[in-house]
Image 1 (cartoon, rainbow, N blue to C red):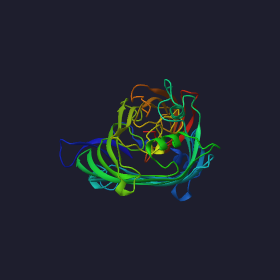
Image 2 (spheres, one colour):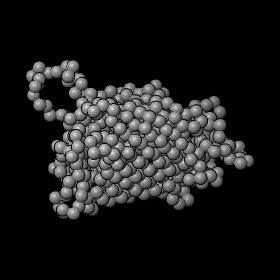
Image 3 (cartoon, one colour):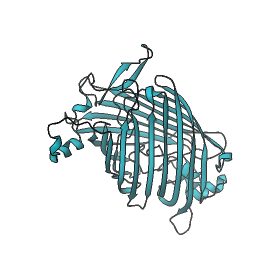
Image 4 (cartoon, one colour):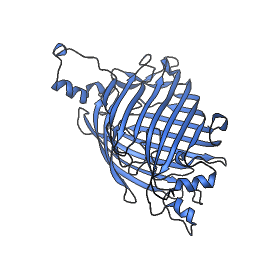
Length: 415
C-alpha cells in the first residue's frame, strides 16, 4: 500500500492525500519488512508461490526502553484499516497494549484514530489504566534563581535532584471532528484524568509536588483533571504512523470544569504542528520532518502538579528524546524538533534518522516562557516491521544537558 496525491472526487480544485496501490515513486509494497523475513524463513507450504494479501494488523511484543520507565515488556496490537474508498479516505489506526517495566510501572491502554468514509468524521481518543512510578526534577527549565526562598529552591531544583512518585492513573478522553472541507476539521471532546494514591519515595515526604500543592490549594495525594475540549484540525499528511509528506496541525482548548468533577476550573491551549518534506524523487522515505508542540496556560487558575505540561507529556510520550519524562515542566511549555530521515537499504528494511530538539518552560517563580532553552539531539535506526501500515521499530540514542542520555526504543516514528 502506497500513498499519492490525487484530486478530490467532490471538487476538482480540492486536493487531498489519499491511499493508492501505486505511487509516482517506488511504493511501500516493494519494501521488505520483518513479516517478509519471517515468511521467507518459515514459509507455509500451501501459500508458496501464491500472492498473499497483507494484514494491516500486527501482533508483537511490546518492547520499549527509555530512562524514565526502564525496560518494558508486554503484548501490543497495532493496526490500520481504510473505512471507505482508498482514493478519498485516510487510513484509520488503533493500538492496544498491556505492559510491565523494570521500574514497576503497569500500563494498559487502547488508542484509536478513526476516519469514516470520505473523511467526513474523525474520532480519536484513548482509555488508559496504569500503576505509575514517575520521576520528577522540579518546576521550570533548570535555571538557578537569584536569592530563592527555601520553597523556591526546592521547586526550582537547580541541582537536578530526582524525586520519585507512585500513583494510580485512570484516563479517558474522546474527540469527535467534522470535516468542513478536505483537510480541515472542527470538533469537541471530553477528558477525565484521575490520579490517586500519590506518594513520594523518601522518608521526609518533602517534594516539589507537596510545595506546589500547598501554594495552589491542591491535595498532594490525589486530583481530578476533567473537562471539555474544543478542537480545530488540519491534516494532509499521507500516513499517521510514518508520514512522507503533508501537514498535521491541531489546536485544542482544554477547559477543566469543576461541574465535571475537576479539582479546579482551569484553561490550557494546546497546539501541535507537524510538517513533512519529501527530499527525493526516487525514494519516498527520504524526509525532513518538523514538530512544534505547545501548551499554554490561560487564566489565573493552575493545573495540578503532575498534570503540568512538560518533557514527554505528549499523547504518546515521544517528545524530548534525550531527557527523562517530565524532566522539565512548567505552567506553560513549548517544544520543537527537526528530524532528518533517510533510507539505508534500497528495500527499505533499514533506514536511519538524525534529530535535534529544544524545549522551554516558565515557572511560578518569575521565569518567563521562551527566555531559556534546553537542547538535545541524537540519532537512530529504523527497522521496517509492517510495510502495510509503515510501522517501524525505532531505536534511538539521544543526549541532553545535566548528564541526561540514553537509548529510546519504541514502535512508529516519534512524530
